[in-house]
Image (spheres, one colour):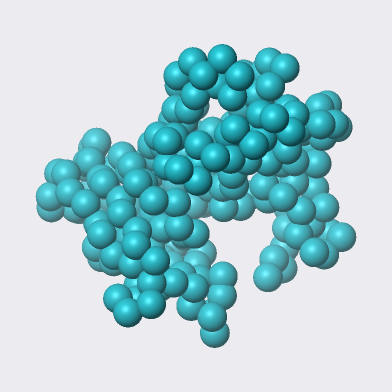
Length: 217
């Protein structure tokens, strides 16, 4: 439920790469990837893209609050090829996050099954009996006074996976309106989670391509 949806207008649309088959954009935080049911939620990434590229289709999504590299297909054949790559986990993704407190281990993994927390949806939760397998690797980049900057590599692509996995370590992502405690929420003006790198095979040439965008935090 979005009570106050105010997507950023500047930058309106940031294109990182474009050819006849593939479009890579840098999605800003607080912009929906696809439209919501309410007409007030019509402004979204795909609507902005389709004004310029009417045939472009979404291949995967980022949470509204998450910024970063996002892939779209420019035609049906490319969409089919790219979708299969994501489903088969043949793509590679890397995120940057700032989390609350100091993570003691500089590297590690979180392997906890996730499921939708239905009474509190869209929140997700750890469920060892019914949850779907979810794996995230982490690598500490920098310690701040009250936070840790960390590199996150999701092996699976569950909804809110990185947010719940960091929470499970006792280090919620700063600015997370769904999962952060009051101190972690107040520590940043937006969710400090950014899709920094995406690697995939070009849907036509099959050439391995890597796209990156730096976080604005």
